[in-house]
Amino acid sequence: MPQASPEKLENRNRKPLEFKGSDPFSARAVRSFMTRIGDGLLSAAGFERVVEVEEEDEFEDVIDPAEAAAEEQRIQREEQLAAWRTEYADRIAARSAQQERFSNARNAAIERIRQHADTVQQKLSEIKEEPLPKTVAAEPAPIEIVEPEHEVHEQVAAVEDDYMRPGADLFNQPENTDFIFIDPEELEHQKKAVQDTLDNFAVDATVWDAVVGPRVTQLRLKPGLGVRVEAISSLSNNLALALAAESIRIQAPIPGKPYVGLEIPNGNSAPLNLGLLLRSRDWQETSAAIPLMLGMELGGSLCIADLNAAPHMLIAGATGSGKSVCMNTILMCLLSKFSPDELELILIDPKRVEFGAYEKLPHLVRPVITEAKLVVPALQWVVREMEERYKTMAQVGARNIAGYNAKMDELGMKRMPYLVVIIDELADIMLTTGADVETALARIAQLSRAVGIHTIIATQRPSVNVITGMIKANFPTRVAFKVSSQIDSRTILDGRGAEALRGKGDMLFSPPGIGTLKRVQGPWVDDDEIARAVAHCAEQREQHFKTSITDLAPCDSDEAYALQDAEASDELLDQAIEIILRDQRASTSYIQRCLRIGYNRAANLIEEMERRGIVGPQIGSTPREILIDSY
Ligand SMILES: Nc1ncnc2c1ncn2[C@@H]1O[C@H](COP(=O)(O)OP(=O)(O)OP(=O)(O)O)[C@@H](O)[C@H]1O
Image (cartoon, rainbow, N blue to C red; front, side):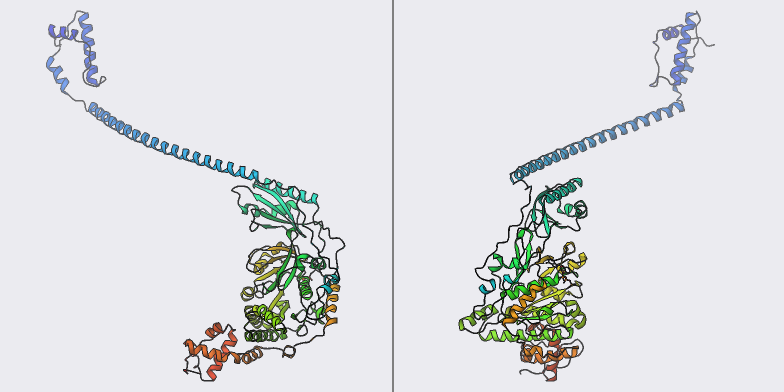
């Protein structure tokens, strides 16, 4: 066994126990450590360890591969750790930036909410200043009645002769004029039911007040801030259920008012007598040129339409809804305002039941027309009458009937009467005569207002093949009675609502140009009243039918219609030739537009020109050649 020198041993003993290398647990360090412990023990026991120094040096230079791999792994781990530390620091930085952004956004939102709360507070303080909702609705103001000193029909006698128009005293008067359309207790109950329903569905709206009408009462609801009116209208079925009402109508919003209207049926509904309404101050002092008493609106005001401003009216509704009663009241209004010298009537009644009571009326220009095939010739007569009237007015330089009559009054000559054409059941006529009646009606409607000719048509079939686009465009004043569906309502009024009416004279009136609908209850007039009024007129005047219309041949076919058109077109031929020579355009549609005539008539004019050698024949789609320079 090699012996270590005594110096070496001494040195070893004195050397503190320390590990070599950076890793305290490497194999080399452990061995060195163990050797030193062993040497220490030997020396303590009196032995000496002989160590070959050269061998030990050799041992120190050898690199253990396992140790190297471990070292390598350690370095990699340290690098990985450093990379993770950097990544972690980056994430922490990004996160704090995000937190700062969120915090800014939250502060901005809190600020916005605070501002909104201030606005709400301000609005609430404004609302508080408004009057509190009435607990009881106002009943309509009583109708102001004008009591004549003598019999009404004497008082309103025509100035120029002894003809006396039927006055209000010829019509039935109600025994009691203190109407109570709705019981106040019932109204309170309904208001509560509506408010509860709104609350149950969490719709912030208040039942504000109520406007009472003859057949329905309108509850006015005030929506809270930020509440969509649609949220209320979408509850219509639930509200109807809560009120146990047959139908309700919602106006969201009421035009021109900050409320949503909820119209609910009244318990009490006595008919409104026409006689009472004709005694009202509103009727007697109306400024309308051709007034028509349509009935009573919500709140009790009277709805008086002016046929002169209308100037043509379309009445539609399902069977039994009150159209005929409405036509009768219209006729009664006309008779009570105009003598036969001031008003002429043409009544067309294909159902043969409605206008039988008027056969003896002196205002008629021909017997009531009950045959569909006579309708087109009658309307053609109206067209010719219209043209005659234009000529007559041109002779005195008047632009309309009012101007003409003013001139006649100055000269002490006969005035031009209004001519009103009333057609009950347009559908039957449209089905029998097709487009001819539509064209004739459109022609009359477009041009007749200035010459005092007005048309009122009624139908129980509000479908698009009866109320066509052409009819709708020319009849701007519409009255809709109850219909069976929303589609029918749209056909008549261009909007819904008529399907929720109650029938029996409950109507929606659409005045021309306003676009808002009025809910009106029509007055009631019975057959005896009509008979009395007609007899009153007939007793004073004999009928003088205008032979030109009485002798009209039935118009069975398109041929007969075209023939009559051709005769009439002669008058316009010179004008048509002048137009095509001046504008160098020879087409039917151009003539139609320039002369404002129907297609058939314009086509006849062009064909007549072709016969006379003024224009060439139609070849394909190329315009006709104009063959002359002057005429
Ligand atoms: N203004 C009204 N006031 C009270 N009741 C009315 C009123 N209008 C109509 N009625 C009631 O409704 C019934 C039917 O009315 P009307 O004959 O006018 O309906 P219509 O629409 O003309 O029906 P049809 O198309 O079948 O002739 C009347 O007999 C009457 O009982």
